[in-house]
Length: 594
Image (cartoon, rainbow, N blue to C red; front, side, top):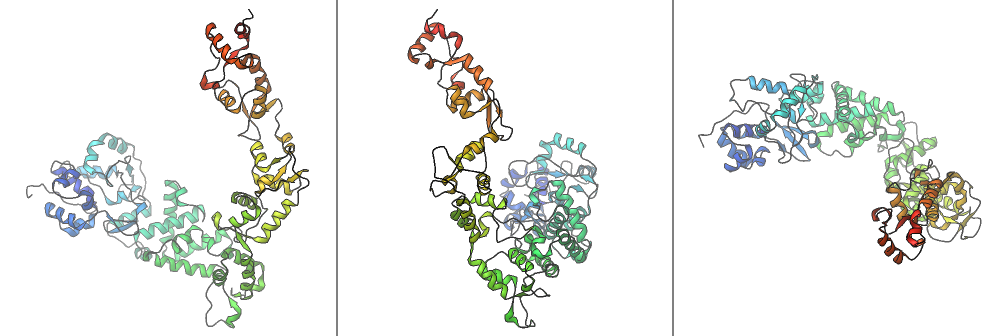
């Protein structure tokens, strides 16, 4: 294969781009070129030693250089660009991005072979590099292509030439942010911005900058995936500016995060997702430095760090820690800290917790239930328990004010609170069940009300008649008077769908078909958007104009009569189903009166 035309690999070029240019220089496309030479394209461009070795023999470039330019997949969902590790979401996949001015510089280089002058820079695969640091020009993207993980660079240049020209003409001037300069320089092998961040891996700097910026700009509970690309870039720049100040800059930023919350007694929850991202979810050694700083900051900023007692603590048997109570009782640490803060006798001046607190919280732990057990005691669903808690009728024992949300299945309540609430509800029963009463389930369906809101009305004593039919489920057992809600939701001059069915002498399915076809107008209830109402005038007008064939005689005989007279149904089957409606003006003709 000595007759192959060789091209050089450029300093900041990725291997898929080089393979594409190498193939183009020899009149082929990358995938077929590699296949013909016994090389697996994807394995070679990702750094597989066997296929890199085959490629090295053909192109005359040493294996180490080719491996350095490969787009490698590392451990823990990491991607390597020019030997620099990135988190996988930070690398663009299946899309070609480029700087129009860089392409112009490539074409102006007459020392390169025509047709293979342009190449793809590694920085263009970094999602957080949105503008070219060299030209201060927006990096534009072609729509993603279906196929291999990385596009065939030269083939895409030819096939989508018009799109590339249009994008190049519309690319805006965009001054590159300091973080974009930093990412590009790290890919080029340069350091020297700041000693602290230079010691960290680039992926750690990017992730920490973004998390820190989100906490400072948008709050500690904001999710990264809920931010737009512009908001994410803004957060990244804000966080990176603080990291340029080194470790002191990071500590200062953490101080601002805690200060913005204003509740250091709530423990590490003041850091929100920032603390969870690095102290809980991040286990690789690249984040060790950040974890040490964050842990040290938390110990100084939080009132109850739950620290382990040292040998110098006097009378150790009289003291414990929040962490020890959590381990012994299983209670949530936010709930523990809140109760300790309310009782100053349980904690010393330097933040050490009295062993008396362990006994108190152990008693509480024995009496708490999860949401499933609470629902069983009430005889309701878990969603009703959640709604009652949100309405303030129940209080959880595992959370403090301003704490992050806890998954529903992990929420805890005191058994006594659940039992008391159940007793209060049943204490409102005034009579035995009668035929005119409706269950909470039926009332909820009739008036589009939450079951929990009806239960709240029962507790407030708004129902004069409350009965218990003895069923296991609370929402089925309690029987209430529907007339309590009827005046509130009645609409003057209108009928509900059930009332309309009676007045029109048809079932709900037929009525729905006629409403969907626009034959019978309807309007939403002003207080219940899903409740449809029909004007009495429209019902009267429909009855005056149309009549069902079966209501004026034998349907079978009259159908034969209609066929003789050439009378067809007013509404086709897709509108009125199997019901045969005729105009009232034709009734006499059908019956043979004239």
